[in-house]
Length: 277
Image (tube, rainbow, N blue to C red; front, side, top):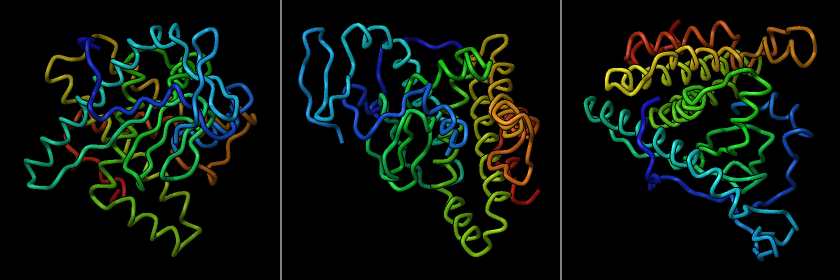
């Protein structure tokens, strides 16, 4: 993806130096990561090697780690700002009010409006505080464990989570939660529709980025690959060797890539009505 390093988004919160809670770790918590894929700083003291440790004894971010991750932090900032500017323009054209989400970078764990965020949960959006939570180590998992490498695969993840913010601003998520409470048997199918719409919204942003010359050859394939890689069927087959369609909460590999492509090809959120399909 074409982008220019050199800055951080004003909507980025960097908490990587202060973990809270009981971090599960990527290895030990991979099951939680897969099952939960899309869905306060402590008291710090400095160690001899420059790392920070909170009151629970958790290691924070060393200067070396900070320097190593800075290009990724700036890339996340770019995608965050670019996607939100795209949606702000779309909202303005439809005379709707837009307010940006914040994106919280953390390591191991941090507090969120929806409870403790842990790296093993994967990226998620919390509607209660309107923030996306992301541990950068997830991008390594996306590449190594899920076989979805590339910067645009990472951009897809961010755009998908911001898609949930758009749903929140539109009141879609609250209506879905009400329907799930009134009809528990429909909870999973409704969750799938919500996730597929967020995939479609990610595709709408990708369309805008392509029109503005931000995409490179192979970027859309990376996005489609990432959407497909985190399909419920692929994850279940990898974990259990079988697939249970009734337990899907995010959609199959084919559905997720299909709805991302639909948003990309149409460039319009009007094409993302998964609830009317």
